[in-house]
Length: 436
Ligand code: S3P
Image 1 (cartoon, helix red, strand yellow):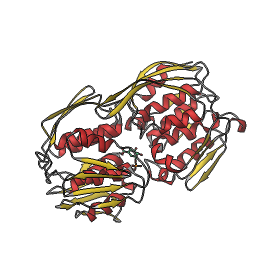
Image 2 (tube, protein in one colour):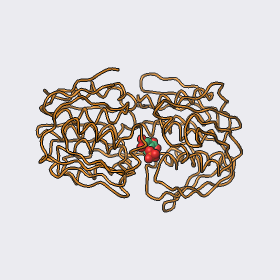
Image 3 (cartoon, rainbow, N blue to C red):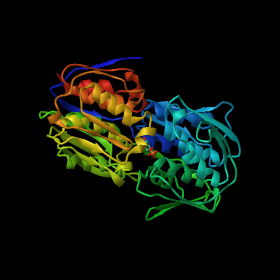
Image 4 (tube, rainbow, N blue to C red):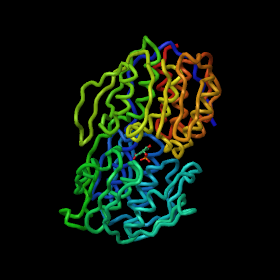
């Protein structure tokens, strides 16, 4: 259990490249494994989570070769996955488990799918229910938790009204839809990240969107060759990782940081709107479209942050950035209030509880609520360095490392290796940019 000590910084300066987007890497790896031929996935995420996905796809028969950050996946074709003699291990990754459940539901074999202690506590009924409706036989502990036993079946297309705004649930149903008879539709109650739709299109699936409904045609139902095609793709840098540097640089008037090649898909950039409303000085530069996704650089300078309320339909669009926003609260004028975000309680940790506990350790004034929290702003006093327990959650560890840069005294992050779930080089990159 490695501890990382964060010393106060004067400002952040320099340029940084980020690991490839985690959400996109998962999807490209899964679709490449289902495609015919060899896909080359460049700037593939270094995140442990995405390597869990690669491990699962390789156990299902895809050939995976990794050279630095390029991954070559030779797929098995849409109907060529092989059963795995051992349980598939999704590690800490909810995306791996939920999206893969969709693919496995449509196979002609059974699979056991498991994960680490945190993942075994996260709700899976949200994917079990629609996949069952499509015809799969899925068993889980208490009908909700991993390990899951997925007995694949001949699926039928459904029209699924999602009860919650979750990109993972949407994606599980769409991926199962590839193996279903006819057309499968999913309607979301509020927009969520659309990387699955874009990736399906890139790999040659037949997909359409109208309003809040996305439809995919089963590969057996007249999609040309009935196959997905291998692709060469560049994964954009991960905006959810960029956010830690955007926040850290914003804290100091003399900061000047350039983040290269960041994914700026409009279903992910709500966080930049939140930052802009708070008074942050962030500029998007050199935007270009890249294989369905949008990519650009982000330049950030120090600013005086106002704070504010984050709630409603915006929540699913900034869900992974909420830990960083909450941990910035004590450095803002008015503080930060987060509402309508009960989902945070079923992420890699109970993020509302983890944020409240660790903010208090640093002397912040926090009110914890069932669906969010209120963090008092600067007037409530300065933050004090403390020992942080990230509860094994990468985004909690990174958020408090950033908060520690502007606190009085040192901050120690326990079990700091957990950052590797999304960003293995986080601490070295943060230390490289921080001037002391
Ligand atoms: C993700 C969707 C989000 C997000 C997660 C990644 C994805 O989860 O929190 O980190 O890649 O689809 P939900 O869809 O469950 O909200």
